[in-house]
Image 1 (cartoon, rainbow, N blue to C red):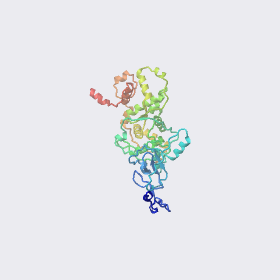
Image 2: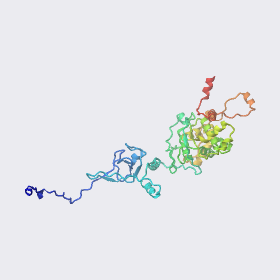
Image 3: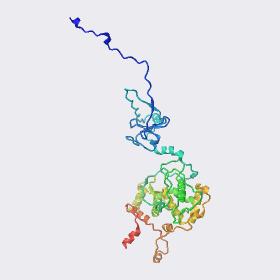
Image 4: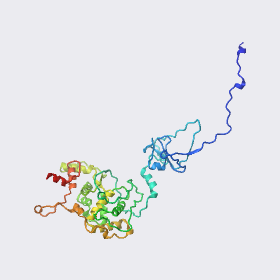
Length: 431
């Protein structure tokens, strides 16, 4: 009975293996990468930027330069630049996409491997370098060449100071656009518009014209070959020497010659900063890099007040730096004091730096015939004194009283914050 009840499976019902395909499937079509910034296809021969933090995030060069990003990508993510974008192939059905390879960890023991990594990938590319690569072919090559004897400015830490520029306050013409503030020693100087012929440098109300602004901006570029955007006191003093100024006309150079010791440049910087503050010239203060003096130097100070001033000079930002606008304002004040001498100074500067040589020599009529009374009063006029005061002083000429500078020195001695105060309003209130 057991044999009769045993079930048998027919051969037709047995499981047979699936047939093996004789031909391979057609390859998947190639597709271009899509930019996540502008949503446009990136041509295969163009460069492509790949983010290592974001999943499947690609950028074209245009969106990368103008920083047109979409979330979750941010500027500080590490990226890789592919010279040719190429194609990507869609994965076959049923297979998950393979994740991109992880970045190798930095190894300090194998410098050869680090060199290979630097050659392939560029993490967080430098904006200034990319700016120069893109804008380099579009820049106009300037014919002005900076003198070789100009000493490059030292790196400084800048601190903002408030002030109103002369050209901006008087409503002068709009300044030409400034170049980028990044240091660019290999780039050419920015080209400012040059007139077809010489025209007046000052208007009827003695405000600088756009021609004067463009001329002084071109000279500023010659004095700033690294395009830092600022001039240190040494460079400005050298500019005065080039024009033929007397040695005592430079406030910084005169103070430097009258001081001796380790902090002679700091004292000269303070005098020059006070001079700029009295003329309402906006400027920035930088810190000079120098070695720290020995501790026994402070034991020789005569009083605690002098110690406070020395400590302020030594530790705080004290070196005045002139921007392009400040350089234009200060030059305008200097030239309007004596337009006749200013004509000689400017002619020497144009000849030395090779600026606007196609226009010929600078004519005298481009400068005012008489000096500006306001500039002369700011620089040279002292407060009026009674004859009795002259007799008491024995006929000696008292030094010029600079209101803003006196307040600044007093603030330094009292270790207080310095604020500009209108002394005329204060005297009226007291009366």
